[in-house]
Length: 150
Image (cartoon, rainbow, N blue to C red):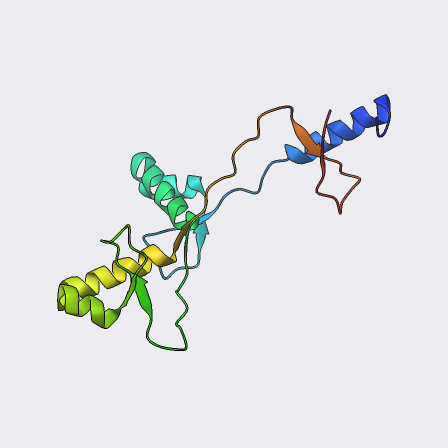
């Protein structure tokens, strides 16, 4: 026992209160207003769009939060190359000109864009809950990331 029975129980309770503290209300940008920097709560979405559509727009706004667009860095030694999304087993990359030569102007441009999105989209997933006994951080150890069971 690190703190002893009585003090350990008090610290465990304090850590639980910190763990269960009310999180700041979630706010999201309205995907129907891409130029706006204003964010809204779920209640505001429901008030604005109605129950059903508001829930759908809220969900869509959450998906926008979970996707991070990253531009692929251009190589200094030549034109940008991307993998062909139609060649899932191949690791070969092609320039935009090669896409256009292979697929034609319109289809090649669309596949080039699709290849860029596949390269640049990262999905963020919520962490999985661990199995086993509940663990909490010691509120007295502000620098430590170590967790303890009761």
